[in-house]
Image: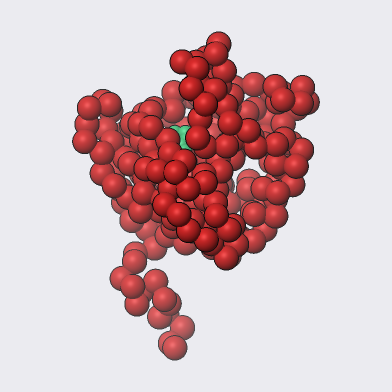
Length: 217
Ligand code: MD3
Ligand code: FE
């Protein structure tokens, strides 16, 4: 195969796919690092176990969550917020692994954002049937900072709406290794994830993991 002909070209899957102003999908950017990222997810979730948070309205979330970095996103009957400690263990969240920080910075830079030093990484684990209803990410202090999201394991259909909950969302398949950078006018867009389909992935078994990097504080 000639050196400039990669499998991405055969499937006519562009390396960078614009989704909306400020949002870009970097196909396969996390593929090479995936085994290391998954080993680091196992480390993080040993120290800060995955758990099903409860929404302020009293509903158990179907996605299991944990965090690493200086701040972690939590939800309970009192509301949504960032916390420097894990309410389950009372300890600080585990540090952000070097593999996580390097990928987040690389993605933000490729998407045209300046130095990105996230202080929060939310680890989401989806099992078949788990979903995320349409919502905005607005608990972060500086909304000019982008969000970087990394998909690992089973595929999902991501819903990307507009600035209003009513805006009809576009459906975007996200597969193992995909990285999306959401900034600028897309930063406050409504978004969600359809219920995960059954499946088995060679590296993650019956799960999808999503890493969401944010500058929260
Ligand atoms: C678009 N997670 O944790 S990541 C979340 O796949 C969350 O687990 C989803 O939404 C997941 O809050 C989606 C992609 C994502 C994250 C933040 C965004 C998309 C976004 C913020 C603004 C617009
Ligand atoms: Fe979100």
